[in-house]
Length: 202
Image (cartoon, rainbow, N blue to C red; front, side, top):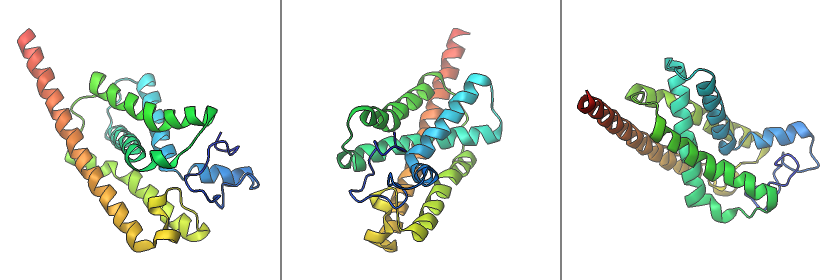
């Protein structure tokens, strides 16, 4: 849908790489520049791996899993608080938009709360889980400096300048840190309750 331009840009101005007159590869690159797409892809990878190997618990996989949980949570929160009013989609595009920004975040977070995994989150894992989001920020700024096109209004250096954009990103990263600590606290609480329940049953 995005590649056929039925999924509009957040900006009223056409993206340099998003116009339907551009080659398909350019529109694919434009599509993959969105943090929403990154987060949904990581969630799909994690969910698929859980189905294939439910007991997977290597440090690398745990890092990717927490990255998915953080990124998809941020996707849902930023969409709700900052972007929802800027998007006007119809038909199939509206369904795609709801799946990417609302249903997937809710489903993934609820799946974690209901079935786990439990006890994976740690300070070290939190720090490692920021690698993917920071990579997105770096690539977005580099790409934007080259093509003068940005996926979201709050990172649009052309309109806002580097100062405000960097400030926006710092605020978002600080909010992500708070969210990560909150998830860590919830995880510890669930581990405690599960352990207590097992002791009572035993």
